[in-house]
Image (cartoon, rainbow, N blue to C red; front, side):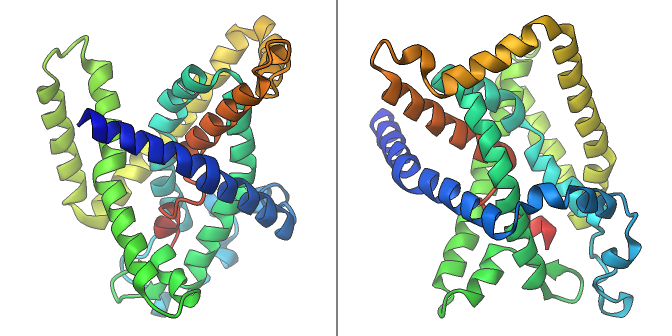
Length: 294
């Protein structure tokens, strides 16, 4: 198992260094320029849609043709944010600093800026090429990939990968994090694991309706609480805020490592960790959020 873990680690490093990292950055910058910085210029429009102010734009499908279990913009937003505002935003940041130094935070910011456009494009594609299956809309990369490829093999591959990642990888990371946090109070990890599994089962086996109810009932408070805590931490440490921002920027470009001759390695490691944790945090380009968007 140790040997297998090392192989997975080495393959992951190679993929992130030469394929995923390059594709995410270059693709995100290209889309940002091509879409004329849509993540900034249409931010107010996005907010109006989420809160339901723009009723006409929300009615993009007539009521007669709308599936019985279709979701509103706000409901889709809550489901998507349930995976974004979670472990990646808390534990992921700490892991990025630990493994890539404070400079990785800067590259997480950059990933958030360009990733916002990537997320917009993939969610828009999901909207355009979604299909009405009677009781609900179905969509995502496995659907709009059919328009890009002549055969359906890539669609099956992406569907299997997403099912595996959501079924085993993401849930395992979140469950392990929760278990670690409770270990001081509940020494037996199996007890916490069973409780988490029971809660998951209650939500998932309740169908789409219960998943939506839980997301809409919980996520607005989670997001507000998360933002208030972040703002509170900044305000309590306001004397250190400016110097910390400067330190992050200097570390991102290796200014303090120039004298030691390790600037190339340090910047590369910071960028790599920032991109990794940034993707895990906002899921831009991962292909999972468009499913909820559709």
